[in-house]
Image (cartoon, rainbow, N blue to C red):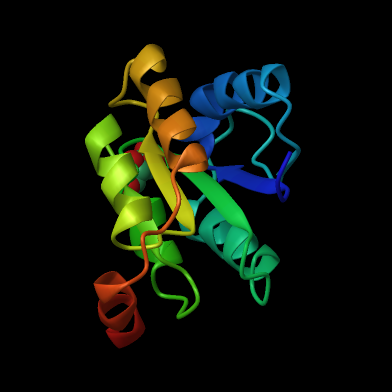
Amino acid sequence: MSNKIFLSSDHAGFDLKEKVKSFLTNNNFEYEDLGCSALEPVDYPDYAKLLSKKIKGKSNSKGILFCGTGIGISMAANRFSHIRAALCTSVEMASKSRKHNDANVLALGGRILEDKLALEIVKEFLQTEFEAGRHSLRVDKI
Ligand code: RB5
């Protein structure tokens, strides 16, 4: 379909990452899982960094990050200047994060979201385009 999607999580986001992987496979998206690969505790900043480095210089690449709440891993990713990570808890937020903010990374909370909603958010994020126009000026100011 489009560019490869990079996935990365800590232990608290691991289960949701596995479900999102199944969703991506079933919907013909290509992805690369950067870890973690088990439920042993790890530090979410390390996994935010891995993904952030992967999509550097790839303007059309997208990533999805997972931790318990989505908060820590989105904070860590947003320390990188090329990352616009959006922590989303609704389909509307996912839509606006793409249309208005040109978010290149979606952050999800594995301990917050029901699976069904999480997959709806992923779908919306991946299928929605940036509207550009007046939003480009604002994104450029970030
Ligand atoms: C891990 O216990 C948890 O703190 C982490 O996944 C995340 O929710 C931090 O923001």
